[in-house]
Length: 502
Image 1: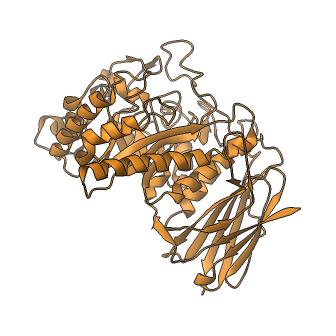
Image 2: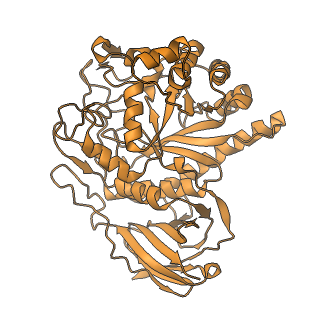
Image 3: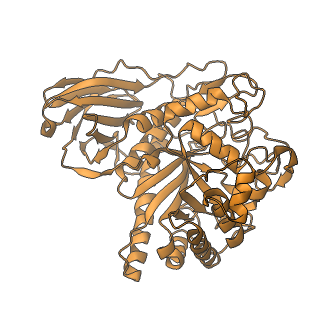
């Protein structure tokens, strides 16, 4: 038995061009993300600089456009000067965000080298917890000024003649959180962020700057924090950050699969605050959103280096299931549905720490279930988002009403003459008979119908069984002129790629 559903896709229903940075990610000095993740000298695949070749290959396949670094909570206590210069002279430090020992063997220059190999830009973060204006402007000078000043010449003496030219910078991290080193009130943070932004831009006027929004919509100061911070920084920043994580720790799958509706509401609420401040200031400038931390995080808050001062201990190494991958897919669809306002987003994180890629120190890597919807969206979700008209049966869950079983969006890549439909069937037991109407495009043909599914919603990929949950291309999508019919199996992620022939 299957349930009818429908999409109408019209080439004139344009929402926005997809900023490639919507498919960004995040690497923090946390757990084994850096040490044992991207960097492991002596690993069989490591290059001369200690970068693991196997993880680099898996990341390149994701086509990650931008990666946030070095944190995260880590950045609020980080002295960036400790991570540059000869490695043998770098000091070890007690890292208070995660209660570990930081060796500083990977720092700004090493990460810049690695990001180039990965084909990614760097979203750099500055410390506004224990530090401020001076350290931030010096870091910009070190990274971006060509030569002829103290900090730029210091970079050159470290072997980097050409500047890194990092364009996107975060003004701190989660500064409203009491867990943050140097946590601040909205006024304290807004004043500091504004003055830091001015100084950074005086060094390099080309910077794009991201102000910290609330650490989450559950914060008691949510919305008021955003309004106050933007009131103090509006003309000197370009983006406001959002952070959100989801889990099914209560074992309610129907409610879990609906949580992307919370992401929709979160984005809409923050955009409304941005527009309120725009109206208040009578400004012509629009603030865009950077959802630079999002993911499924099941172990949230449960680990903070049980034995203090270890070096790169395993932390937050969640094992992701099929249902987790479906939620990630729904969140990716939500991001695309808001591509007119969300221009950057970072799935947090990329390797080992709540990540789509896992490694064994000295051993192999394996890809988690969440790797696949992320890869599919990043590779095939480039172009123009076309807002679809969707007809779908709905259900109610513990926290949500009128949840559509069909969660879907479409992207038109005019250069390739392709339309891609991303769709999740939230129904746990029934398939969806999907009818897609693309008459405005003329005739189309199905290039591929990829499905991620498994009879067991808790099925996962592991070190011992890395191929337990894999996508397949046996989908039933078939075209007839400008119409497509497809069966979306129960609890499945679907990618239907279409070539426009009309």
